View 1 (cartoon, rainbow, N blue to C red):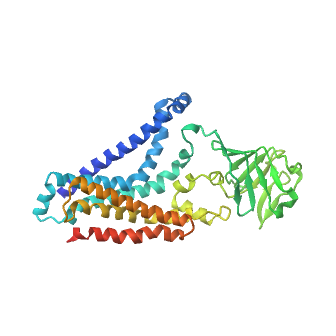
View 2 (view 1 turned 45 degrees about the vertical axis):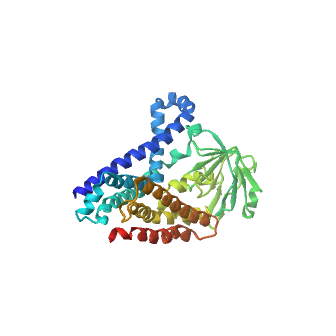
View 3 (view 1 turned 90 degrees about the vertical axis):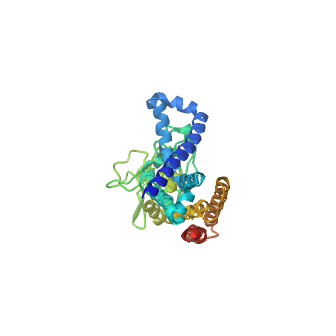
Amino acid sequence: MLIDRYITRAQLHAFVIVFISLAGLTFVVDAFTNIEEFIAHAAEAGGLWRVLGSYYGCRLISFFDATSPVIALASAMFALSWLERHNELTALLAAGITRWRIARPALVFAATVSIVAMANRELVLPRIRHAFSRNAQDLRGDAAHPFEARYDHRTEILFRGRTARMADCRIEAPSLLLPANLAEYGPQIDAAVAVWKSATEGRPAGYLLTGVSEPADIDGLEPAARDAAPTVLTRATASWLQPGECFVTSDVTFEQMIGSTNWSQYSSTPDLVRAIANPSLGVGADVPLRVHARFVAPLLDMSLALLGVPLVVGPIRRGIFVAVGACVGLTVVFFLVTLGCHALATAYLLSPSLGAWLPVLVLTPLAAWRAQPMWQ
């Protein structure tokens, strides 16, 4: 137990130092690059430090999610190399302690970090994902971004517009291209603004269009439905609508409508599964790939640790710099294999499930082979 506490404490110190150093370097460079935007926003947000704390606090959590496996390996290499540098590893081996027993605290620490990262991915990041949609140039979320056309596969309506604003989930100058079953409304619905509204009691989710100019007689038209589900609501039956308004139902949220990657990258796994089952969305290969990748992430994290740790505690004695260099090379190969399989899946050359699990099938046996000398 004493050696466990000693190695774990050293690894924890190394993890904190490396994490703070990398995050600090990244955020300091970014902060100085965008300092004018932060200062301009400070007066209305309660001060510069509050703006920086809110902005980079969320990104610190995202940074942990992206870098935790590599930093866990780096901290393990540091802690075990520290034993080697001070000849403590030789003393432990001479005392009859096996290499596996020495490496076990480092592997347990890596597994703990992987579990924390998984919990962070499922519980914390989904709650703050809206913060990532605003960069330093759009801290208020009211900047206009070009809007790319998006198709609702359930209603067969093509959503078009000039710009989109994140702050109030608004599409400026929307022009909705209608399918043939909505011919009574004409070829399209043009309006001044479309605002996303979540579902409430008595009203489905969709977009409230105000200032409708086409069709001109929108208030007198009857509502339209598809497969017994309402598609377009008008004042003829929806008294809560104002003159010149209509409501187009859609299960494509505003985040999904503007093509933001934040909803898939930072959503929880159950939300991603629901998105796959959403007939309106028509997701590509990237979302199923991300779901499978969530399940294999702990296995890949441990494979990375098992690839690097034997470089220090294995039977072949290497210098510290040689071991670190070999560890960097293995890490590069690890991510090339993982990202390469993911790229093949997103290009539809592999199925999403195979693209996510193939790195495990390749790297896990390699990690087990690399770690075998620690058991001897």
